[in-house]
Image (cartoon, rainbow, N blue to C red):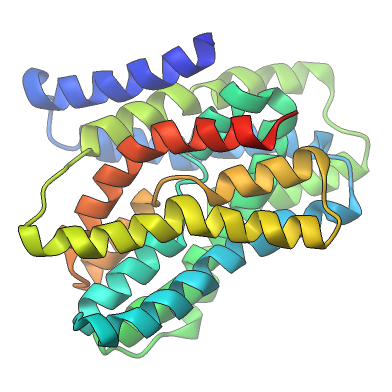
Length: 300
């Protein structure tokens, strides 16, 4: 219970600080730098060596690709029929095809399912969601913005991302028997800074603005991201015989709110930034209810 309270408190503090405290310019950028380049790699280095190889782990990766592929299929089909611009369609594919599997996924799954769930959430994020963001999401953004995607940029994004490098090191460490206790004691406190700082950053970036014409597209987007996508992943998992914590972690990560980085990517490529930010803000609020409900429905 205290972990869920921490989640809400850090989000609320971020909103309140942005609204009333007027923090220095660049505060969010600095916090995000620490989270992505220090705290997240430390958490990955701590948890990945403890993950035991399981034939069912494929589900954690495939479920993240399924969410994105489904968004591309659904919104690519709906867009022309509802009169959406290519920019609006591309924005929904990006923002509702990628979940907030790190900033919100880690702390929420840790609160709901403990360290066993958190270690699997890391696998889904680092081997599933992140490669999607760094590869096919860039391709989609380029196509819908009328630009040509560059393979060199995509490969460089993946190979230079600190948490991905930490993942590779962590896998090797796990195969060699794990880290010595004293080194684990270094990774753990650094990695623990991720939850409060990431949620505080999300709170500081929270926006909920949208013109009247955006609400229909927002409803379609969140209907896929928060309901249909996790349901599709659950069907896939059950049909394939996946069970236990692997099924739970995969479905919950699929159910997370839209990804902050996907919204930034939509903004960079000029893909209806106002809609992207509206979907992000409302998705964060709604997911605070829908993800715990999904967790309760999945049971023990």
